Image (spheres, rainbow, N blue to C red):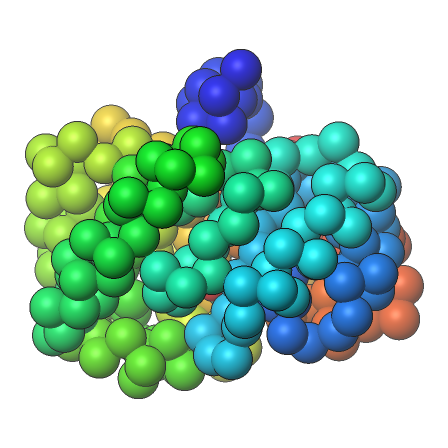
Length: 245
Ligand code: 1GP
């Protein structure tokens, strides 16, 4: 089964959780340990990516170790065309829709497209939209950030993503954001689109995860939390239970 089919069929029955691992923050073996603990906590997929500094070698090694350790789909969450790896199950073939940079909108995608084909990675077309405060990815991605008080702007971008034929929409507050995307914005976007909605950035407590899930997110991504806590399985487990309850 393709990864997009796994995602689309699973979101019909339940809310999903994906664990984002930055391969640059620890060794490949340590990344695999995080993936195992996240799997035990009930996560549905592993995303691999980060905003800066990742090499192809570290991507390859990290994905190989994770694939050896867990059965879950491993999806590349790229910051550029240079982080593609044939060991992943899929790749978010994404455009940063509210970027001012042509390179982020379409340039890196042109650089990567032929490799995606050659390596045989499943591309999952995704519209990526960055909301205030945006953090590092907002700055590096030269995003014209969606103001937190203007959810209608996020709706317009999300609908454009759907009309382009993208299969997923991702609302991003930025890794480590003090607050996640406002739940009101999540609800407004969810009410207008027919494709699954991913929300991430700044979700570090069960309460916040629950609020975002109840607002209508189909998939919730957490990254930073696994780097903050001692017992990943226990702490992530609480967040995942809150999402799926
Ligand atoms: C970043 O949305 C993800 O792309 C995860 O954010 O690190 O804040 O959980 P956090």
